[in-house]
Image 1 (tube, rainbow, N blue to C red):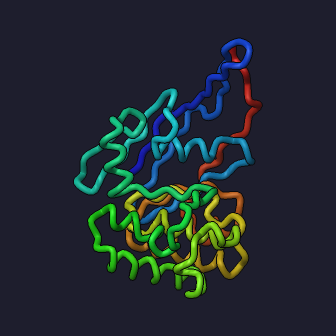
Image 2 (tube, one colour):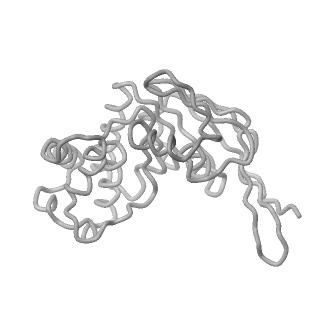
Length: 232
């Protein structure tokens, strides 16, 4: 399971005199295998920051993030060494951000194959899996060998989804997964997420798209917006 206890996050500002900004305060939630928990709340409420704390790109200010891995070892992701965190990202934790970071002059199918290759999967098998997912999300075959930098915003978002889930992670973190997608593309992406759910993945996602959330989420966690308070 993923269990978050009393998590808080503040940011330190170094403009003029040092101040801190409170972003998240006393977050408590849990996600179990085969379950989707949706984070909801207005922009700026801290949904993306919470996902980044779980993924380890933000350091937490207080609290714990307990994750049980495939071997039943429990890790506190809020207090974990970098090597172990990198191992979990490669083997077990997938993250879909709001933006796809384009790698120049590499074909889309090769970009998407890389997470599987990093796990020791042969390049040919990884490419077959990448092409299977490209077809599922409606990317035309004529684009599979093209550079992602030439893709539209919606196409890049679909690549972003594939890149984050191609390894079938045990824990999937989604940051606005259906943003910028047309209705048909959205349906394809939601079907992929539901497949992961059926396979037993734990899914924690930030949503503004309430229609999409209703399709896939088992429960929701509302992050209450408060004024960003500067504390000397």
